[in-house]
Length: 598
Image 1 (cartoon, one colour):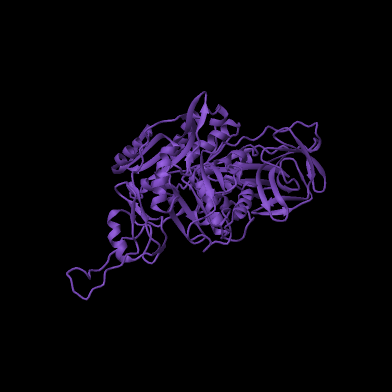
Image 2: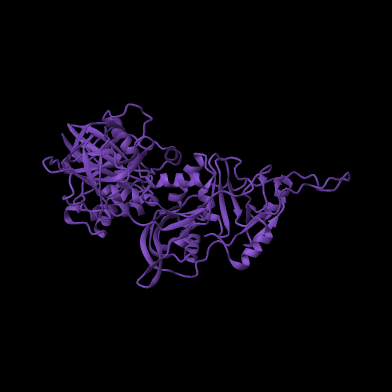
């Protein structure tokens, strides 16, 4: 049986998972209408793909292995390692939005590897969709990224992924996804299936099973593989290990199926090598040459993760000790290759590709019953040719024209430089090059400035000399000076000073941050102060208390707005901001010595 290996790549929310789900249903690989590639709880809630996943379909006697990849730039490491192991990509582009930052990132990687993408212009039913403009923008992007003449001659399919229909020409009728599947068979080269050579297998993804341990998902490039057989693992550092395959799986639809043997060209999952890692080579003997290693871009931000030691520690969580947190982080490293962790005696330094990348780990931990606290995210600086350099990002901003001024002003203060600006109807698309340090903490402010009508996307473009004078939003913290239950009367008087993070009856402790202050300086407040009781009537004393709804803290919002001398406390039920030093005396003493965890 011939095999085609493809990956579906796109910017976030351009419809690749919806398209994949429709392919699964129409080829009969799934019968449940609610079945989806985005099976993780967080993926369902957020509507985005976080982890790359494998599936397969059978069409006209051909097996098509499909890898669904994330579209958010923070999970770019999930995409990079997949592209090396497939033969072509479906580049899904929204017919209204056109190419976006992550479109450029994933397309650049695939073109560098010599792949010949198939372009799918999706969501052509949108009222504002402009198929011809989107096609021209994609062609220009191909040229800009240095595509060869053969790569520029890409096939284009027009689709509505939500309805499960596609067509090769805009004048054709829409019925099903057969035109897309036919294009895959026509344009994608069959996978090499030379079984006469000795085995060479390379993993591009990892999984973990409590009984089997680490699982490797990868492609068989040459030969065949069989369970119970001894093989040699060539590590990236040059060392060699030997071991035996204990379990072997292939993919059918969304499920994995246990098999005894598999041949070259197929994508399989195997167990038996507890130390196998991304990009290493599994082969039959030591004399074979290892496959080229897979490179994954380095993390760009870091933060400290600590045991929760607030006055409320241990009240809501099941796992609260340093040992339990260490074991959970070690398990994360088994599968999350885009993340790095330094283990210290009483804290852990976590390195990730962005705020969302790290916040997903924290959210998963809190749902599993962990309590922890984290410091403010910091960018990772590097010394390059004797110069101190920091990561820069290309930020693409789509906003209504009347909001463009405030966006240009705010990004300018954060040392962002506009490199392009285009008008379309009453919308403006602006492209900035901005330090990652300047972009940290801006997304929430951007939503407020654009009244929720703006779209901000970014991608890493490399390291450049560090800049000085980045001006961020100057707000202070409203810090509780007492412990107890917050009262509406006190919060009513405090809400004039800024935004509150808590509601009446919320339990607070000394050093807990209950809101921000517009003027920029920290103030100590008493949120449990009640109204003085008297038997005398006074004008206005019984006026109704009207409280503005509080700004509810989430993990992402907390990471954005926290200051360098604060911790974000995360438990299964609560997200709180607190000062690193809870008492005012301790904070003043620390201020003199500048001792903060960053």
